[in-house]
Image 1 (cartoon, rainbow, N blue to C red):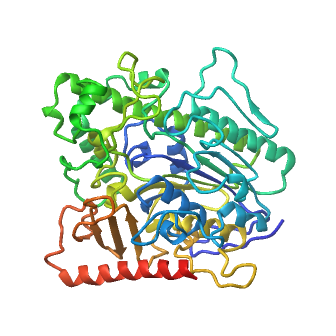
Image 2 (cartoon, one colour; image 1 turned 120 degrees about the vertical axis):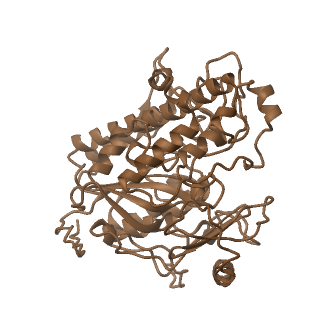
Length: 530
């Protein structure tokens, strides 16, 4: 056991004789405004409780897609830097040997690490520092294609048997595993800190939820996505979460791999809608179908929140809640995707049940990402803005405060390592210098808003690209798989909705930021060739 002294301007920390436990909770494809504490009407009392007792970050960023975000969280590097996403001649592949994952690094500071849920990284969790792991597709069939598959699980001396007739739902099963890990940790490693990585599949498509949860939202969304957007935006402004106008719906933009309107009508039914059009232009059948889809999305989030509440109760039972640093975030913005895979779609079953397969789609994705532009996959604010709630009673005196510091998933590893008593390594065991980590620790933000600042942040995914320096941001949409359109320029201080493209007005600023984007890529390329 070590003693850690943490000092910030607001004296938010006192001397500790233990390192904090860490619980990182990650949702999948959850919109910036979905949770109640971020302006949504979805019932999330446990996430809201964490927000009331801690901090909400208003300018936190993901990478815009599932697997790159997970790489950034667990390595502290941009995904392209560690070959977990592509850019130019850098291809998606296996992480370099030097790119260790966070649980591997935490071993040196006495941590036991546990993984429950989605993986979506190269290698196996237990070969990358996790002492226990369950939930990835390698271990069970309830990946992001189904939620009602696989009747039980067994991992070492942990076991979940499902009695005949009992209904399996992966969101519940993942938390069963996480709680089992925590119970064994208390039994076998009570005097050691833990890192618990709880990565939900929810609310990623397909929209699968327990009917009891769906029933809570029957009729709620008949008002439509345009009204919901306005209502959320009003609440967000009142809460001080945003200082911008509401973005316009991008009616003609969807992922290029989406099913066509004709295919959606044929394979799912006449209630489907391929585009984010005005709600009032939909047929009555479409309105009913679309309202049901959003009810399922909300039900998936509420169930996830309920299960988070079970984890909180376990921490309280262990007397570990106050000294557990809890993060809650989403891996990217809500998804406009509309595809069918897995077990396909049976038109005869209720939406949300095991044999149905529908996706949220661009209309409701636009609402979920209120007030921002575009969706998952793009590098505009709707794709890369993530809620970030941070809660730690023993270490954060602030209660219910906002943090406007610009942060990114590359900051998570250095933050956790600092609190563990260390930092990301500067060299290998053989003394070879490692690339300089791009992230910064967020520990100072726990005590005071405005205490940290990135020089710049950078994005690229399948032709979409962006760079932010201060309040200036350049963004470009993909025109094909790997080709980008022209740079757009925005001043995010007043226009995070990215509605006023200033590229023609300030061409030199575009040129300056574009050159920095290119320089960043060259840096990755150079590090990977070493």
